[in-house]
Image (cartoon, rainbow, N blue to C red; front, side):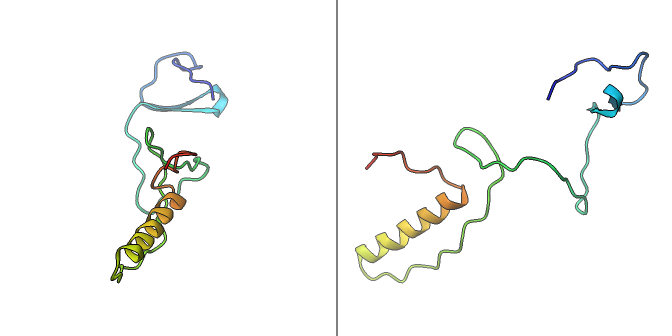
Length: 98
């Protein structure tokens, strides 16, 4: 996508939102309000990273632990971590890290 800083049409604009480049570019200089019932089609869906925001998917449910020993509790906790990583809510483990 090429960013155009000036409209490709001649003359002043009396509105903040307008089309340029024969309709290929929509310039939004005012507020863009998306109502609850609106649909946005074509936006890329990206996972969030530790450095950038993105779409975060809901993790699979993890039942409350009923563990009565440390080993079972660790297994329940690791299952939760795996579900968060699979959903993209947590960064994956670094290869080779303990």
